[in-house]
Structure formats: structure tokens, C-alpha cells
Image (cartoon, rainbow, N blue to C red):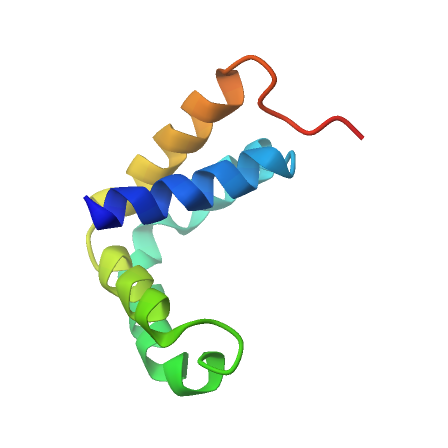
Length: 90
């Protein structure tokens, strides 16, 4: 449940900034290498800990180890972007 809440917060932030289409394209293109990304995130956690909370970095890295995470995030972004008033008009 916490993992889904974290992914939902990420999807909400992406849609709120009007980045749904670029994010969907990016997620589709990096899907096959998500495990490598998770391992890189584990490796760089001590450096990224300065900017982001270590607990959330570890949770994201663990989520990326699963194959279905990126497709689930893409679905969440798509659902949120289709909702009325989803993007931030600027």
C-alpha cells in the first residue's frame, strides 16, 4: 500500500507539472533497463541522500527492481492526465 501511495504521488507530481506525455515516452523507452536503474540508485544512495530522504530512495530503488513498476506508473500517469483539470495551465 505504501509503494502504491509513493507511485501515486510521483504520478500526481508529473501530471500537475504537465509532463505526462514526456514521462510516458521516457517510461516506455527505459522499461527494459529498470533493474539496472535500481542498482544504480542503490549505488548512488549515499550521494543522493543529501538531497532526498534515504528511506524514499531505498523504496524507489526496491520498486524499480520489479518489472511491473514502470508500467504501473505509466498507467497511473495516464489515468491522472485523463481526469478533468489534470494539468496545470500556464
